[in-house]
Amino acid sequence: MIVSKQPVLKKFWYPVMPLSHLKDRPLPFTLLGENIVLWKQEDGSVACIKDRCCHRTAKLSLGFLEEGNVVCGYHGWTFDAAGVCVKIPQQPEQAVPQKARVPAYKTQVKYDYVWVALEEPLNDIPDFLEAGLPGFRQVHQFYETWNIGALRLMENSFDSAHVAFVHRGTFGDVQRPQVGTREMLERPFGFVSRQSAEVKVRGDLAQKAVQTGDGTTTRRTESEWFMPFIRRSSIHYPHGLIHVLITCATPMSDDKSMILQWVYRNDTEADVSTAEVIAFDRAITFEDKLILESCEADVPLSIVDGAMSETG
Ligand code: FES
Ligand SMILES: [Fe+2]
Image (cartoon, rainbow, N blue to C red; front, side, top):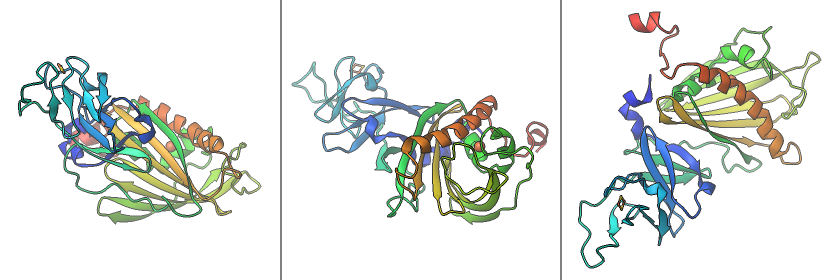
């Protein structure tokens, strides 16, 4: 499955950048192969239109902002949030031609990120249980491009069989390759999977998990897949810590995805610092990245690549 062959993917919300990145200039992003430009309007709301001026095709993201609109850096044509050209500076006396416009896209701000849908979305941005729940803090972890098809990350997120091997340097244990049973529940736009697993506890103990004499702890995980490329994984440790990972693979192209990850935790900065929380998941995520970037972008939907997928 490669994203460019699935037009339905345009009908979903994707987080494209932290809201904090939008300051006083337009910024580009590539979503599902579409070049888009985002900026913050004067009232603080976010606008998003195609990053292609309808005059001579220059990228509008190379321009600048003026009174809440984006000004093309080539000849100064100016566009509003609806993608309508509202000013041609060389012809101040003449009406702007009606066809001088570019496509505009829906935006929302949620969880401190800007979300974009290229077409009318089929569902809402997921509601994450812990967002805003008393006693939980939000820690932003990563915003970075990986050279992978977005589905690779989602498959990996629900693939217990990789943990013992890919994560042998952190919490995996090659001596325990078996995967436990899971409980699966289907949802309208995804599924929930519940599982308990024994894992190794690392020396740096960013999780401060209770460990047994052999250096393991048992953690209970509830993971939820929100179509198409969002995962919420709520990890419960025996001593009460809940570490909830929100991981999004926003498809930029067939072989490139923006990976965004943040967590909710029911502890405090005094218990475990933000830097430690990031460092713990950082090490694990790099292990996944190395392997996933070595895989091809086209994700087979059968167990064995090649033979099975080619013969059906
Ligand atoms: S290309 Fe944008 S104003 Fe000319
Ligand atoms: Fe992993």
